[in-house]
Figure (cartoon, rainbow, N blue to C red):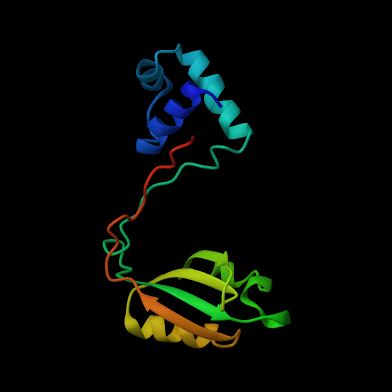
Length: 144
């Protein structure tokens, strides 16, 4: 990756809906050259997708939490592909330390959170931390 690729990544992370014409203006290349570079970044897996950032509270999911689970063996959360498809689970990570995995979850109400914790209890011992605020909810990746 060169400086132009890094500039393209910065622009696309700021606004993934930019046209190739606008991108070309911002990075001082022709639109076909920009399109080719973006296609290459996609093919190489550097750009993994394009997404809308959703405000969870306004989308009806005001309760968010980080849940760690101490589990292992055949009933591990990481071995059950269904857990990754639960609508409450936004992210699932294998981690080091006392827990096996960490989940970022979002639900509409505390009763839903309680039901989720009960479901996760079948896999091991869950421990949760409620997210009170997110001073840095997302930031673009700066490629060195």
